[in-house]
Image (cartoon, rainbow, N blue to C red; front, side):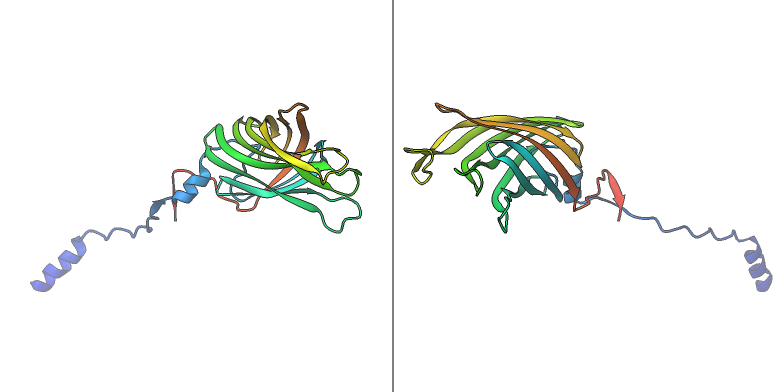
Length: 228
């Protein structure tokens, strides 16, 4: 009798359910990834994290300049600008930088520093940063178009007696400002930039710049939840 009951229970028992594939646990992306993936305009002043920018600009009074910048954490953009004239073994370099206080979907607020290079007296041997601009930046961008306004101070080197004797000079800090307009995508763009310092004879700076940008960090632009 016990054997008959055991056999009947084996025959009438329901089949075991099939094994299920393990479920991949979804975890939210890290706060740093969320920070990098947030929507931002393509800025003429501030670079995204890990973006390397190479630029060539031509204008007045500096004739031309080369620029190299890199973006850190979407807020800091630092680099160098300078000239490399024939006969010089190394280029002359000066620092440039920008700090974003806030970057939204379309609007940005920050500050930047830029030296303005003037040709030497003989116009052949060297360029010197005779003006320094420290400016607050307000920019707006959507799609391939971006524009901005700069307001701040300009520190100028003013000759005391003869402009041809650059060793005799003083410095003045005056009101300065300007604007920028950029057309392009996140990889290549062209911009027009103008600055001015107010004095008896205003100092005017204008240039047209072509920039190439490379994503060194390759930050994944993700949103929502993603599997580990």
